[in-house]
Image (tube, rainbow, N blue to C red; front, side):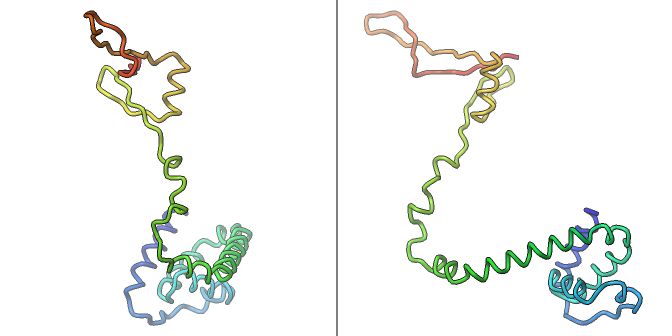
Length: 171
């Protein structure tokens, strides 16, 4: 099924650059599909050449086509809902696209929360970058040691430097 979808997609892109001429279809293959289904396939792929290729592929698998009637109806319903929503919001989308301040703060409020929190952990093979969730999982399992650096005191001697933290992954 995935290969047929990939084939249909490649045919659709190839036929986008081809002249739009109707391909002759045999009467038996076109009669098996309803007119509305042919129209929906043509709308989906944009040209009759791609629609003919999709037609051949869909008629070659009648068992799969029979089982996917409900999926097709659901897909068509989804397309209709999306088209209606797009038509309702078309004016608002045009105005939003034509606004002067495209780098407004309102568009980037969540930039700090979208960015993943990454932590560098030392391993025997080198450094490894972990996400915050992975780090907390390893830390809860006791697989991470926290090593603090040292610094010199004013009068001499060494003390722990809590600003210089190194995480070491136990293996």
